[in-house]
Structures are given as structure tokens and as C-alpha cells.
Length: 101
Image 1 (tube, rainbow, N blue to C red):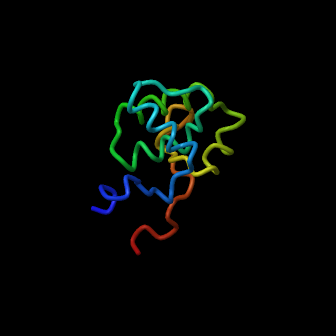
Image 2 (tube, one colour):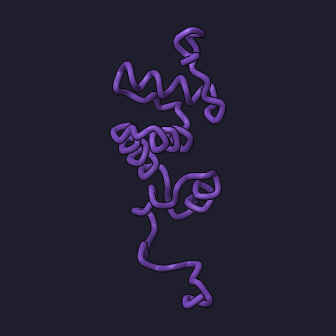
């Protein structure tokens, strides 16, 4: 493992701010209010950090509303994580025109 020798872990797909927020959470069990919850949720999902994922989902559910949910989904947020703001979660907004294909 080169991380052992270099004492660095490279995570090129994570911003420095999100990486810092993840490390802060690992040490404290808390997330700063200034964290980017969209990015942190993606990191938590990628690395199997279920408690952090749950916390991010709860924070996003508290800030996502009818007027900004499309903007949140457009930012790369997994739509499943904001299911509770969808008035009809069973609806299929993009039905397959040819389900037999």
C-alpha cells in the first residue's frame, strides 16, 4: 500500500472541503452546518458510511422543498435520498415507451 509509505490517501473524486467534513465526522460523530450535504451524501454512500448517509439525508430532507427539489436533483443528488419530498414517489416520470424491448 503506497498510502502507508506516503502517509497520504488520495481521493481525487472528493473535494478537499468534503474530505475534511468526512474526517471531521469520523472523529467527532458530528457534521458542521456549513458542509455540502449533497457531496457528503455521495461520499457516505460510496464508502458505506450508513450513519453519515442517514444524517445527510435528514439534513437534505429538512432543506429540500417543493420549490428547490429539481435544483437539488440536478446537482447530482441521488433522487432516492429525497424520496420524502416527492408527492407521489410511486409515479414514473420517465416511463419506458416500449416496456417489452
